Length: 103
Image (cartoon, rainbow, N blue to C red; front, side, top):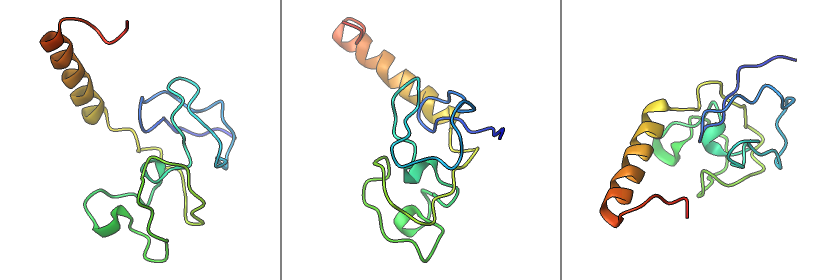
């Protein structure tokens, strides 16, 4: 079954993974857990509890695997603007402390 999912954290294509995503699935590139709120269609940072599903239990850590029955992976979970801001912040830290974090 083909799908257009991308990792919410790094943007890498997840086509090699089969659906439904299990609670233990991780991104093959960045090792981010994928059965998480930030990868779900119901996740919305601008609403209370950051979830549009009223019946879902409150999950405090949005990047930790959970057992939510309402979880539906979103093909729009990756935000390239957030990623570019993260890269800019890392570059600024590298410039401030004189090196890259690759050591």
